[in-house]
Amino acid sequence: MPFELGGVFHPTIIELDTEWYIAFSETKFWLHTKTKYKVLMLQ
Image 1 (cartoon, rainbow, N blue to C red):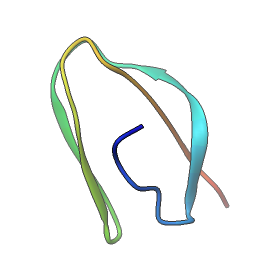
Image 2 (cartoon, rainbow, N blue to C red):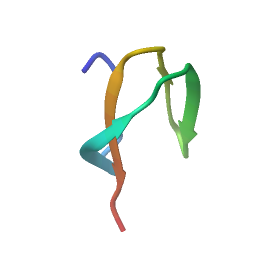
Image 3 (cartoon, rainbow, N blue to C red):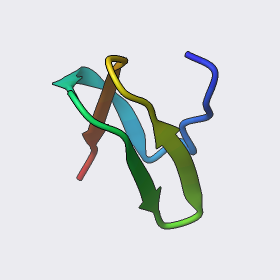
């Protein structure tokens, strides 16, 4: 994956059919159309 996970997140399956901008704390990255990204918040 071309984006960085700032140590707070770890991969899990989320499929997005549209374009989203995600901002978690200081971690910001684009989720583009038809692209599968894997994001899981660790407690």
